[in-house]
Length: 117
Length: 232
Image (cartoon, chains in turn purple, green):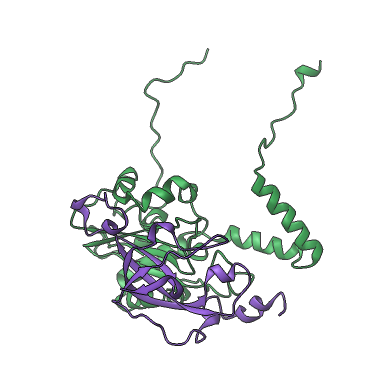
């Protein structure tokens, strides 16, 4: 594989657009409840520790891309669906005030991090 | 004699990251991965970007409901109408690891207020919003806004009622975000150009709300010191 394979693939198309159609059908849909897995991450991750083990709702199926845990090492073999997930603040931080029980956090994770609830 | 001629003041601190960047850049140029001119063109591009196109996008969405729908559905396409091509404007023509080509426009409602952060680093929609402010990159903002959003927003002077949902958007992957705030009262009948003038960078990050009486280029008040130091 050439050193410029990413540029060759993405030039004029954009990233993540250049991975469109490579992930197959998405496993989850908008409205699904998922739990964030606590996978090992000794080298690199973009899955925040504060999300691990918490239940979230899929707000949007966003795009296809290799996961950053692979892409950091230039491994683009496995393209995955990414989901925008909404967490209730109360689920993330138990001491979050009840008065603001509606408050939320939204963030994106790839399919490998999610398990159905 | 010598002590009377102190050297002129110089930049006294170069961070380790700056030294590292310089070293890696010079090695990359020597190896032919890119040229010094490529680097210069990047630096030049980075100096041309700013928050004006994002302000125009918001103003246009306020006056044109069809454009608002497009902005929320496809931020990259909507950006083209305010002169920003996320894919081809950048000298690379595909984005960079910090400027992926997936803009999401977060629409506030009377019951929902968005605020953007990147807790893991400092991801920011630079092609349409320019360089991030210093505070956006600090660990202080990044770790506190996600956990105590209302307290941090209050420090920015933004206090929100209990029945408004505060949604912190933690930008951690390939999407970049700007906030489409509610159009403020007192702007009825304003033109798109007038509206764009009140959409400040902080409104686009979500830590402030646009106001009819506050423009992007307003002179900031200078408060005199309460107990000024007397020089003798």
